[in-house]
Image (cartoon, rainbow, N blue to C red; front, side):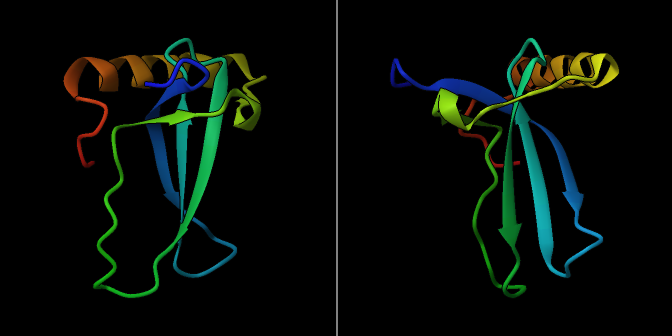
Length: 91
C-alpha cells in the first residue's frame, strides 16, 4: 500500500433503484468513520471485472460517515472483511 493511500474494505453492495444495471459499492475504513463510494455499470453479463475485498484510495476521495449506527455497521463489516479476506480477494 502506498503511504499516502488509505485502505478501505467492502461493507455494502447494492443495486441502484434509479438507474438500471448500476451497482453501488461502499468501502469503509475499519473504524467506520470514512467511506468510499464506487459505482459500476454492468454493461453485459460477460462483464468480468472483479470486486475486491479492499481498495487503497486517496484520502481526498473519502467521505465522512455522520450517522452513528451506520458507523458501527461499517466498522463491524470492515473489521470482519479484514479478518477473513486478503485485500485483493475477489468478492
